[in-house]
Image 1 (cartoon, rainbow, N blue to C red):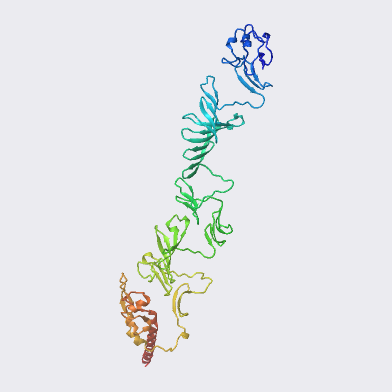
Image 2: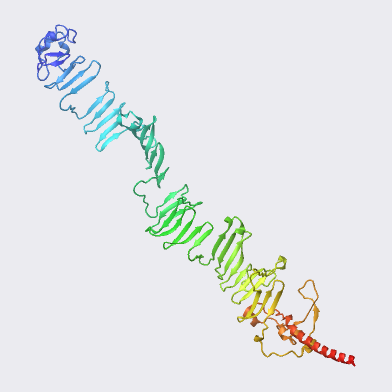
Length: 575
């Protein structure tokens, strides 16, 4: 190649004459005559003498001292000047390749600063490429990818700017933290970086929303700060693993492989909904409903059996209350919100003797008010279960079904009658009976009232009697009666009364006296009724009304005698 011309337009393959070299060119003097270079780029010895005084400073093109080009003067290679190298007047250096590839071939390639003290790029023979910042490697390729590396004691960042990065939301940063051994994904917002994801060296991962932590993995599971919304799919927990809520894990929800559990260990467990429906697993049978207006419905075999109402409950068919083994079964009734003791009642089926008791809470504890025994006995305000209410310490009502016995006890201190019997509706009715007595379904007596007087009546119809004869010894028997004056031992006032002694009357009017003189309860009698203890006195009793027929007969006999005497007296007086 004949190097014939170097100008601002570049290097030309043509002859160079002195006129082609500017007077202010680096090679001055007599300028150059035509010179040529060899294919290797060297000049001949004869051409070197044409450098006109400066040939001694450039022994060859590309020699030890180099080839100097003015600003904007290009060195060109290729038939079509495809590769150009030049330095511009604005102090920029250019390498321009217009066709094919620009290839730098070397086992090691480095781009350095001007003074060669710092690296920009290092390309090594194994294909690795390293990028530097302030002579510190920050990026490198390797067989499995790339490495982003921070300086000693500092973080490593990757910045991702979308949409030219002209808005805060376009900027993202991936950071490896040098202090906390953390891996962060951050978004630039309002002039500062906000956390989106944090992954720590101990394995924990944190997720953020608007720079506030919402989720964190821990050594025992996950921690959420906020709501968990599942828009599709399901949340699955294997058997025995629990969903726990509360600082003390107070609420547990889990399935143990056989059963499902909702367990609350502190205070109350609240369910909130307009209505609650409990159904079977197949969702084709209702078990319970809790309605918005407060009503509760319980079902059996998909049929409603219990329904709460404003003033109580409505039960279809039967109500069963079952106690544990060895325990009583109780039913509590609370009136007026149960804010007073007297508002509470308890019905108990006793586990020991199968009694049914009704009790009220008067003074903070329940006291039995009525007892119904398994045998059918009924006691009201009386806890006795085997004896009639006969002691002064008891007040109450007792009915023994097996004995057909009714007992009433009332303390005199209460100033109340043991029994009150009142007849109402007297303006339209005609029944004046208050009490009626019978014997084997036959009426034997009654107590009646006509509105003014009480009448005690016993059976006396002739159709009930036989062997009817007149009393002929009225006076004789009457004369044997011994009317007495006495006071009752139990009468604290010692009031003297008129009357008879029962055993003194029994021989004369046996039907007026019951019992035997000095009778006491024998063991055989006690075994039958257990009414009174063995040895207790069985006092005789007397019906004073049964003395009336004898009195009447004696009076009639006396009247007859009087009439005879009157006749005799009248006859004597007439003579």
